[in-house]
Length: 341
Image 1 (cartoon, rainbow, N blue to C red):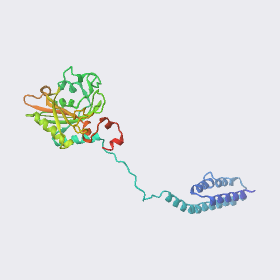
Image 2: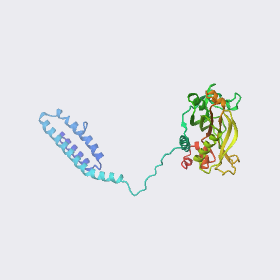
Image 3: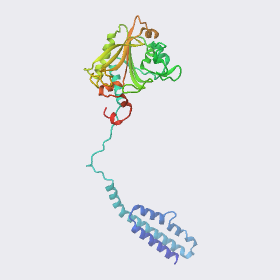
Image 4: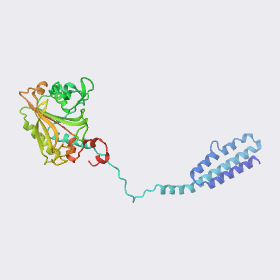
C-alpha cells in the first residue's frame, strides 16, 4: 500500500471517529491526536522530504486537504453536540425556587460578654470612667497597697497564682485602685472589669478563673449612704425593679466599715436551694468605705476626703438573671446551652 493510500485510510479513520464522538471532550482528544503538534497529520508532513521529488507536491496537498476535512468535521460536530451539552448542564444546575431556604445560624456575643457590656453601660450612665487594668499584677498593688496584713491567707501561695516572688495573676480587680489614686486627684469615679484568678475549688458558684467589676469613688463628703444608693441603683437596672438587696457587715482589709452585698436568689425565689446554700440569697459584692490607710498610701488625705469601693463577680449575674444553677455551664462551650441565652 502506497503512502497516498495510507494517508486516505488515516483520513477515513479520523472522520469516522469524529462522526461517532458524543462529547466535546472526545472531539478535543481527536483534534490533538490528528492535528496537534505531534499528531498523525503532522507526522505525515514530515515524510515529504523522504519522498521522490515528483510526489512531494501531490502528497503535501493531500495532507492539507485531509487536515481541512477533519477540521471542518470537528467544528460541525461540535455545533451539533454543544447545544445538547448546554441544555444538559442547565438542567443539572437548575435551582428549584420552590424549595425552602437554608437556615444559617447567626453568631452572637457570649452571655458573659453581653453581661459585661450591660454593666459597662450602667456605670457609664452613673458617671464612672471605664479604665483598663493589667491581669498580671505586682504583689504591691494586689495586696500591700490595699492594706493586707502580711499574715492574710489570700497572700499565701496556696491561694494565688504566683509567676515569681513579686508578680502574680491578679486575685481581684481591686488591684487597680492604688494605680488610679496615684495618678489622679479627687474627685475620682473610676470602674474597671476583667478576669481574675484564684486557687479555688470549682463548683456551681466558684471557679479558678472568673470575672469581676470594681468601682470606687473618692471626694469630699462621701458616705455609706452614697455606696448603698449606687449599688441599689445598679441592682435595679441590672435585675429589675423588684430586686431585693441585702447589706451585712463584713471585713475586707481595704475598706472600713465593710459590707457583704447580696440579692435574692432567683433559682429558689429566696426559699433556699443548693446554689444559695439554703440562705435564699446570692452574694453579689464586697463593698465598704475605703480604708484611711489606702487613701493615705496613695497620697490622699483621709481627713479631707472619703470614698467608697465595691467589687463583685460578674459570672453570677447571668445566673440571677436567667435562673441558671451552675456557672460552669457558661464556659463549657455547649452551643445547645449558649444559644438559649
